[in-house]
Image 1 (tube, chains in turn green, yellow):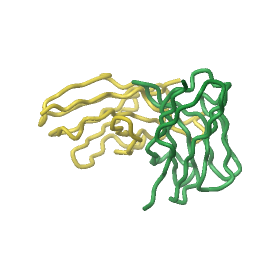
Image 2 (cartoon, chains in turn blue, red):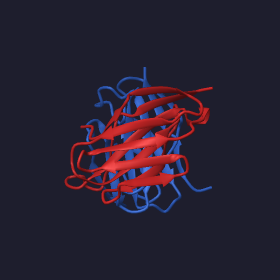
Image 3 (cartoon, helix red, strand yellow):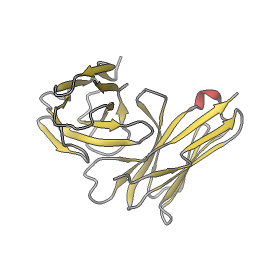
Image 4 (cartoon, helix red, strand yellow):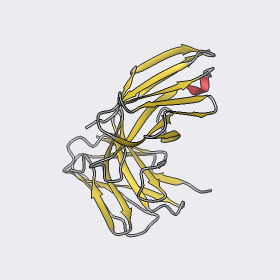
Length: 113
Length: 113
């Protein structure tokens, strides 16, 4: 089954803790993206990576970090510096670095207690 | 910043009726895409229209693009209860986009039996 997987589906974290969200794809896509979605809102870009070992900040990168050591994996760490981390996080990928169709994972809902 | 703004924010119709959603954007674009999101799930790509195209069809979907007015519309004909979802437009800006999409705030569509 080809696609993008995100884990876990639901994640609870205490204030002050870092947490890492997983995103894996077996589509052989070059580019991967992380978005944040708040209730009733659109998607805001956190980080994106067009190639292994390279990534760029999106519109709301503060308080987040990423790595891209493998083509198929793009984990996102939500650090304690992120002031309002409770949100729905979506990972996506595209075949190349172009802006054609993005393929989305099912999302991870992070709640900070 | 949100490039695309959808209108209306919410729409409720009866099954069998047509649903029209609009998207306005601010800068010149290479393409505009429409995505669908069921509650609590990832986004699914519906259709892409390029800046040199004016209209595109896919099944019950019809998308128009007016670059002079910087606007697009998505028409869903003969709606079904299963069409209930949020619909987002996403734009690829010509300049400064850096190979990334900017998503609008979405239209919540409810199709009632």
